[in-house]
Length: 197
Image 1 (cartoon, rainbow, N blue to C red):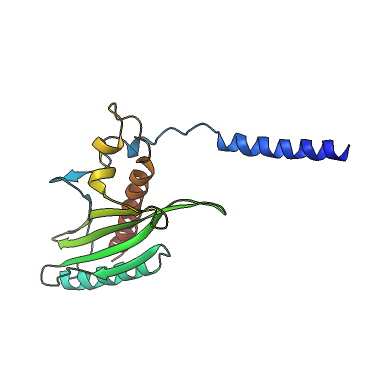
Image 2: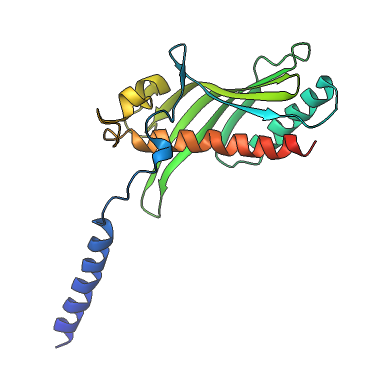
C-alpha cells in the first residue's frame, strides 16, 4: 500500500512538472517584430534622442554623462568590462566599450546566457543627447562549443523573423528581445538622469 501511494505521489509530481514544461508559447510582443531592430548603413544601430532641459554647458554635461555611465555599468552585476574607447571632450562625445552577460534563463539546473560586446556613444548636441548602441557582437556558450556572431548575422528582421515577419526563426528571438530590452533599459536610465540635470 505504501508503495502504491509513493508511486502515485511521484507520478503526480512528474505530471505537474511536465505540464509546466509543455505550456503553450506566449505570443510575441509586437514591439519586437518587424522594424524593432534598426539597421543603418548595413549595421545594427539602436539610437535614441534625449532632450536636454538643462542650461549647463556641454563640457559639464560631458563630465556628468561620463560619471553616469561609470555608475550605471559598475552597478550592473552582469557587466564584465567597461572602458572609455573614443571619448572626446572637444567633440562632446562619450564613447565606451562594454562586455556584459545577457541572461536568457537562469535556474538551479540551467544557465543560458551570452556575452554581448557593444559600443555605447553619447553625443551632446544643441538641446539634446543622442544615445547609440552599435558594433554589437555575441559570444555564446563560451563554456561548451563557443559561437561568435554579429547582430547583423543574428537579430535583423531578415535573419531573425520568418517571411511574414510574425514569428522568430528558431534560436534568434531570445537574442533579439534581450538586446532590444538592454538598449531600452540603458536609454531609460540615461533619460531619467539627463532630464534631472
